[in-house]
Amino acid sequence: MAFSFVRQEPQRGTGHAVQQAQPALAGEGITLILNGDVPLVELATARALVKACGGTRLALLTVALQDPSGYGRIVRGEGEGEGEGESKGAVLGIVEHKDASAAERTITEVYTGMMAAPTAALGRWLARLGNHNAQGEFYLTDIVAFAVQDGVPVATAQPGSPLEVLGVNSPRASSPSWSGTSRRARPRRCSKPACAWPTQRGSTCAASSSAAKTSTSTSAASSRAAWCWPAA
Image (tube, rainbow, N blue to C red; front, top):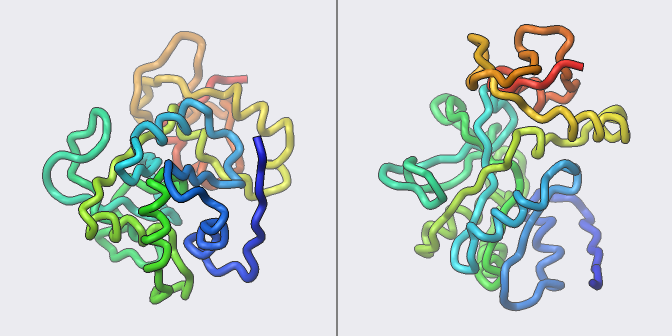
């Protein structure tokens, strides 16, 4: 398999980054967009995202966090959503945290930064991006609204665990020991009041035990109340 690398200079946002790579993409097919600083995403999750796209839909990888601070919020309408097992309204767009209203910041479903899109449609949407926002950047998330305007369904898929979408934002988080620990520390179902799921034998709730595995990552702290890690 041949690989091509494209440098983004200057760095003017996520949409601008994909714009730099767009000329190297094939004219048809599906483009899968992943985050370079999210190393724990599983192959099954990537495949689920491509399947959700199916070559005709824009597919977003989303996750629900108790504390979604800093993440783009998934804005939905009324009625049935596009996605396996979903009963929520259809996705209408993504609002970045700094541009979100007080009401939008209460939304707990967030965009992870990963998506799959029909390549031809992606090229058209990238050409329509603007930078009229609080950051003055070209947001890749703006293409969701373009898809809705063009009548292209927007589907969602979810990772097997919130751990898969943790970002590497510190020297500790990039170390092999942290990566190995994060892979082994799969979330368990827990019955503690602060947690959302019933316990499996042999696990300890991270919300109630100082012995549980935790991460210094802000994202890990955000999801601790909803997921539990086995004790060391």
